[in-house]
Amino acid sequence: MEQFNYCLVVGQTDVGRKRAANEDNMGNAITQNGLVSVVCDGMGGHVGGATASRIAVDAILENLKGSYYEDPRIAIGESIDIANRAILNEASARPELSGMGSTCVLLIVRNGKVYIGHVGDSRIYLIRSKRIIQLTKDHSYVQMLVDRREITKEQAEHHPRKNEITNALGIPNMSPATVADDAIIPEAGDCFILCSDGLSGMVSDEVINKVVSRQSELSAQARVDRLISIANENGGVDNITAQMVEFTITPGFNKPEKKIPLWLKILIPTVALMMAGLGLYFLINHNKDVKEEAEDKASQVQTIDNPTDVHIPDAIVFKAKEEFVTIEFGESSIVFKHNGKQIITENNTSFNPDSLKVNSPDIDIVLKGKNRVLKFTDNYPGEMVIAEVSSNEPRKIYRFYIPVSKSLESNPIQIPKKEEPTAGGTPAIKNVPVGKHEIIKIELGEYALTDGEKILFGYSAKPYMNINRGKDIPEVNDKLDHIILDEVKDAEIVFDDKLWTKNFNSETKQLSFVYNKREHNKRVKCKFVIPCVKKGSKDEVVLEITLTVIGEKEEKEVKEETPYNGQQEPKDSIPQDSTMITI
Image (cartoon, rainbow, N blue to C red; front, side):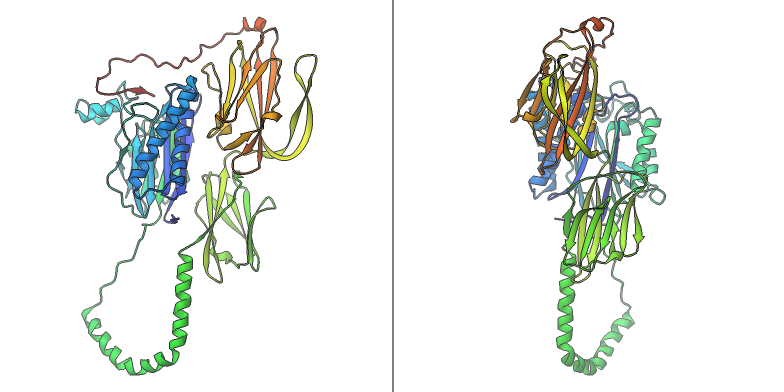
């Protein structure tokens, strides 16, 4: 698999200052098709938008990891089509999400070249030598007017219909993605910005250019974070996402050959003839040694060009200014430790401590004798930190991939065990210690529910949760965003079966609790405990969900909000030759 030591990827996403939840999603990965970066901006309500963008990112990365394409441009087009079908299939299976969709910008780096494609009005910019170029053209109503020369680009920025787009993932008649015909040849210092319109709509191209060009002053992550901050300072009316692919050196860079002066061209053959006699003697007598040395060097070069990748399975929590990995160098081993616990070991090889390199500027390397300690700075270094170390004999490069999570709570917990109900109808709970698991506590809030309303939990890709009255559950899906589940332990689920009916489908990977009783006048706090197993391992995740049901009497005193009905506000007339989606 190609190594991308000539570029790095950093990103940040933010809810903004006006929206209740973040409907943007982003991702990046090194795949068999190259280094991939993707940003998606969802639409269709709080739950629908977040679900659509999450499905799109997951589907694209999964496809590019699993299927190889000779042409990266075909890889982009087909991956976006697959994401579109995945969103449509999910909307068909979950009617409450009907109408959800997402924009998408996708970039692939392969063999030192950059390929791009997009759907919707999310954008890709190139900042080169302190100049900014917009590489994508928005699929939007106002862009169509600009193309027809009915309005200027400046007028488009303030047009009342600037949020109407003409193509998106999640619509049955989606037009194929726009994929650039020509690859871009990057140069050292080039920065590609993939962003949602929460950034491009709030920060001018000029300001984006100035911030990204501050390479000598700010780290890559600091520059992306600054863009997010400026968008919020300017109003933050939408979710804001920016992901940057920065080229630290020119891929495949070679120094130009120096021209040899004419006098030197004449002198060299003359000296060569004079030395031929003497040289012949040494060549004959030392031919064997020279041959062996050449073979050793060739072997070393071949080994270095084929580094060994070592993946550390569990994510480490980001905590600013704290040590997160200690690297111990033994006589014939290297050991990575976190909180004193060994997380990975390579034996039977001696390593050079001075060769240690880290791909992120947001990681400090602290020397402790022969060992090294990696520390976080104030900035989140991204989802993957790569530590590169060379072995001594034979000389070989090892790359250790360390996943990092913004929020991951791994503590000893107790799984409640279901027993006979108490007189009040709520099951008694007995604590049973089970060792180390990850526990995620979710508070859904207060609801005046009617018979048949349900809590829905799905985990076919990244887990999601909603209540089928069309209202989003604040922050819930963000808490679930970092995990991928393989199964739910149906037999170990704990809930109040006097008030709820459980429905579980392992094939569709959906679990729901249907409310079926209103014969009470006081608030009842309900608790649901759902033990799960992470995908690809036996590690367990336990969801502890609480929800308060408001009684019939008290409901009369509660002013309910009007539920979101999934319908868009009416718009003025739309041209017949285009489909409009408002985001």
